[in-house]
Image (cartoon, rainbow, N blue to C red):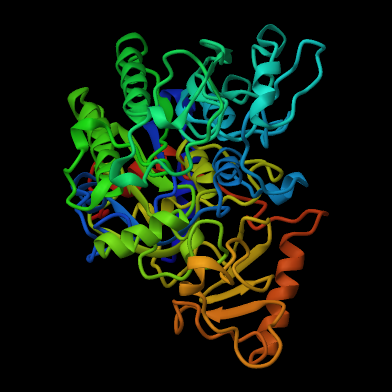
Length: 539
């Protein structure tokens, strides 16, 4: 029986059950969301990596590793909005940007259903810890909304601004401990707990107070206003401790209730500030140590789940918000022979694969068969529909319009030759589009869509544009040309025009979407039937 026929039968089976979602013993869901971690930054993805990532490699060996996974954008704020909203920022009508200072309002607009809203509606207690960075609304003393800019931090009226109108707790999270922007790069440097400011920013941060490993890795630490006692070094250790405390308290106080948790790390964003206990542990400099710290953070979280005996009751997904930072990519190549982009063209901000192809690993013992490597095309936006399917919740057509259910691939039900996604959109630094359809990739712009490869050291990575006038777009066949070297824009006019027409349809302001309107969920009854009480092979 084909998977579609089997799924129809399983959904029918699930529909016959009278159990409510909360009574079906839903699994916990944990998302570890890394920052600027490239396709080649884990040793399970890159056999030539300059260091080992044993805990994430083990996670992949115990679950599924996706090799064609992508971020919604090539910079952080739009990608994070894609995680929470299940759609690209083009659906909001707003441009692409990374927020700083009191920048906002949120990409998660009023009335938009977030992944946390959906999970909470299905009986989950929801929490987020770490980097938020999807925009926030702040007011001055006259009640006027403030724009971005570091100096505007001093104009914030904290009484008028809190509880935050568009913070995590106004977007579906029951519990939160986050930073407004990138924790160590973009002021405002303060902590937000459950929609309130813990301590206002009143101290001027100076970057020379921080370590500078190797004499250069402090790069991109912006000076601005911070709260007294704010932590730069060990930021993710703090977020991990908050997450572990939440899990332990939840298990003690609400043992029959599932939780949905996002741990949003700062690693491996600039500046590179590994905790002292990780210094020199990788053999690949400060950034190698930093990634090793992320590896161990993930390992500690997995260990806690095992200690609490909820390992088999928890789906853990690991993902990244975009490709590796430019100077990080260069320094790791030059100093340690390590390619953070994993042999792909481009880096953070670029529309080429190195800007948005990222690691994606999922683990759920007893349900996801171990040792899977999938070439299914997938995007961070798909986590929304996947969690909804797990919970047995059918998404309304207008919710998460760029989100596909990846459970069939995770559970070993869908052959890679039968794609779940017929197509996928991403957006580069400037908001320009890239479109995948099978092995074909169309870039609706010339050049990178992000970084300038015509000057400075970036010229080392420039490739010839071909003969004659530079084309206004790019077309590659990734199956034959994974490095995106041969632009077929002029050589394949029929394919080019077909991709252009598809792009116009998917991005239309009148009902544009990539996901199907009807997305029947699996639900736990069907999943248990598939896995046959702990045998993921279904034998």
